[in-house]
Length: 434
Image (tube, rainbow, N blue to C red; front, side, top):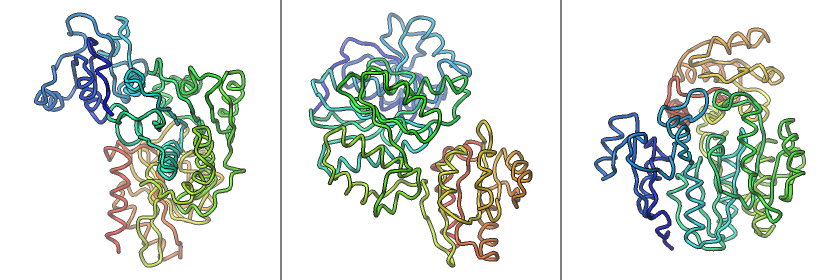
């Protein structure tokens, strides 16, 4: 199946030519739109120009624009809008995420494929990948992407009985207009990205958009293991969609080695509820959960050296995510640090007795160290991941600790391009010790 020229005669500007932007420009052009692209990087503009795209700032495009496709990482409101995004808002040009345009393209091409959306502060990538795996086990045509994996507009056109499984960040959700999810899940909610949304209320409002436009025939899945999510569940009860409340505390995960801990039980419960809403049989759901292979950088055992296990949890970019891994180990050497989020690691204090010693890296190592010192946790600032791996292995052997947990509780961009690069480097260092 091929997309119809659904955007013929329409004109879009694409700002940001990275993982989402450039595929969006290609897809929109193939669907008949006139495309103008821009990136603040001269090399990105040069590469796009070599592919035949018209390189123009949105504000300099002559005539009307039907929309600005803005890469998720570029702000159009807070903390400070990109000047071109601010121009678009001031001139009434709609600002879209590419998932919005995928929905329009699918419906415009005549497909009635269903859309399943997953969001939450933590766990959304695992839940997205797990639901896609369940679809595969059940033999359901599907495509997974958006915030996880391929950009939304690079996904193929699916038949009427197909399912799009989309991981939706808060950055994406604040830019959807017509996209309606047949089944949507909001897993959990804790402070994150507050600079982009102003405060916790703004962040929750962005997440709530995943349930916007749902009708009585749709399903809204919501976690109830934290207070902000319970508040959202109460709000949902007044909405038209059927509400399914899920908890990791009462969902049994049998034989799924890639889904340890209560947080993954919540992820599995959400995936199961979504799959059931999509009409997938219980047997396929159970088999999918059991055979799910897991994702890199999420409590991934990357090496065992002289009896010491190295656990790569680089995806833990905030304290709440780190807590979910820390709860799975009774005693461990902890490698943490980077660019801390609001609140730092104070909320992890109940888990500090499990830490044999912490080795701290990155920009906010001193801030983390101050918290650990207040709670009497042995720690050392070592700055780099290379030094942390060497020091943690030496301590683990000396103290008889079986697990080294790299769960940074911080963002990576002070020393790495992203959490994937950070996790890959940790895995490489661990394997070198072998």
